[in-house]
Length: 241
Image (tube, rainbow, N blue to C red):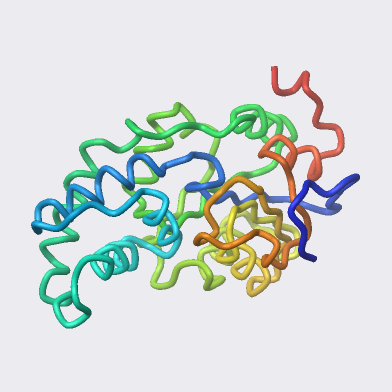
């Protein structure tokens, strides 16, 4: 289905595991990306790129992010020669600021608490490098809310490939049909479809600069708490207090 507003009366039955994206789904990381990528460009003597433009590149891993950013300021023929230096600079800066220019989206803590209260195993599955993902979750005190954290470098393939989702399902001992992936982009929904999982989409993330109306998802939820209520009908505000 495709839409842009939360799905009324949405309920997913038979869910036994929950998989959640990070950037654009739980945390608004635009500020960190903007600082680190523009520091990378400055190191190469290039002018900055507006953060709004940079965020259209987020979601397919660090290498893609660096290459897309370089392409904004350098000829394609120069990018391979600049890539290693650029990525090293980006990662050094990002490591030093990870979390400083970010914000937790509303109802993330409440939604995670409701899922834990319901006894469901929860995994964070992101294309961000694993060490960056873990550090960001620790920054917000959320590490203990997740049974697994898979980054873009945890397995040979990353979203939209289904591999990390299938690995999480195996780890939790559930079939893909018993798992749901909550994300903000077509990348997430495509991975869920390919894995045979259900898919829920939040409307406030990045989605590579495209409208969420383009996403084939099982439903739109206003927040992670909204997702928890769709997954666990008994999830109430009291669980999130």
